[in-house]
Length: 65
Image (cartoon, rainbow, N blue to C red; front, top):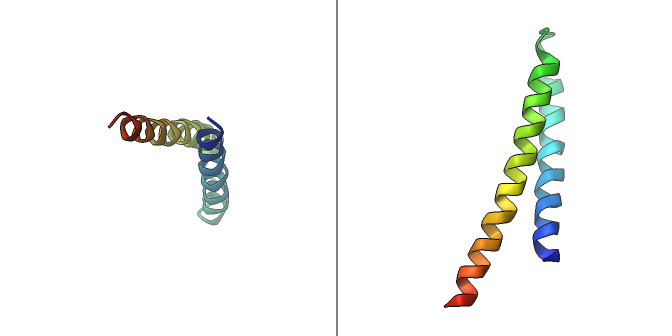
């Protein structure tokens, strides 16, 4: 189980490292910036969870064969 937690936090950390600097690089001063950041952060968290679950399912299927 620890491997999947590491995968989750690793992808989460890497995604935030890429998300925020790229957002600051393409900053247009739009008033919807806080909404875009909030939605982007939620998407990053959910995709990190999805990646960890996919790794779990791949290992689970691999062990059953």
